[in-house]
Length: 263
Image (cartoon, rainbow, N blue to C red):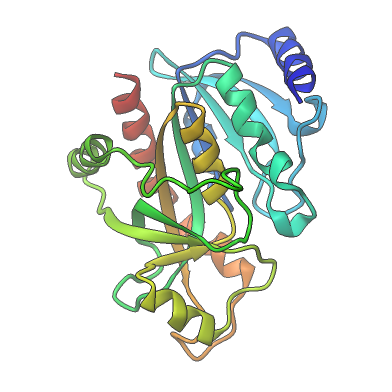
């Protein structure tokens, strides 16, 4: 794996600078944020040695180096999931690459289902805790850390959202394997466990980044109500449509958080 990472870094460096202290991972339907970057350089995931490629609608599948003002930024537009057939090592490989490129602060975003009726689709959620319900962990044989998000950073992000005029809730994110959406019974179980949002990513990326010493921030865009809350079927297109509807607030929040982390 070390040799593969070295090969990947060598290839990426040949494409341009690709160095930044802050990086962002964009979830389903959230890739429009990259339009705010100046002087972007793009590399398809398919060109990076060992890099897994997303097969899910709404994931562009490229690494981008660009600038927000005068601040350099790395962006992974898209990610992979277990349900696409990838292993845990493959899921966290992009995190290892970002770390090797010099990233110290990682902002992870996702599209998630809301478990609580009081949190409607379109709201943004600052993740304060993770529930790993995937049955897999990079801490296999060890105890996972209770919380990987620093209180000072969480407070700083909330203040940043207030200055940007973007409403931001705090909440707990439950990560499952997919590919199917959860059943109403599973959602009731997650609610009893204290979860506010549910999705199929973010948990292992966050844990891997924390273990590598990165400061991690995670944001969910609540794109739909989870199963059983409303009397209607779940549809991935709703995820994409809601992401597009809130893209201006989301992009503004991500931009301001990046500037705060870089500062």
